[in-house]
Length: 193
Image 1 (tube, helix red, strand yellow):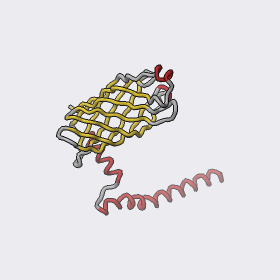
Image 2 (cartoon, rainbow, N blue to C red):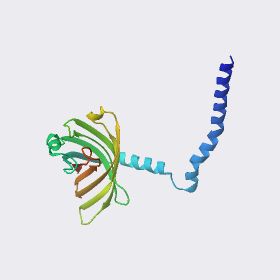
Image 3 (tube, rainbow, N blue to C red):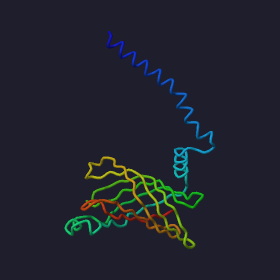
């Protein structure tokens, strides 16, 4: 009986503490609204929503996977697939500063010639050196799954760069690593409808 009483008392105490904290948590959540500026999370959510609601659809076609020759033996490279057949799609938008945002999903054949899916969000700062030309550099964050990791979800954060002419862009990312792993340049074409 005393064990039950101790358990129920600690449960009641936990409930009381939680109830007392609700006004404090609620007040903290309202502070950014009082300052007139949305919180970082609210800005991120608004950006994702705007990108999702965009009417700009894109097609992604993987082009080439290059394994850094200084990090792999010739025998290893000979056994790797560098033609990442696949396809992907997404939605994108250019914000008021002219920077590119996208939500995407793509699947391609990895270095071991096995299917690798990836989905995520991408952002690039855009420069316009001439009419119809854009150069971009930024980051992508998402989730992938690989056969050599039993297709468990793996988070990824990678740099991306692009060279775009009108509606077609050559994009790429570099996957860092050590000797015999990573150090791969992955490129794809992006076509905006």
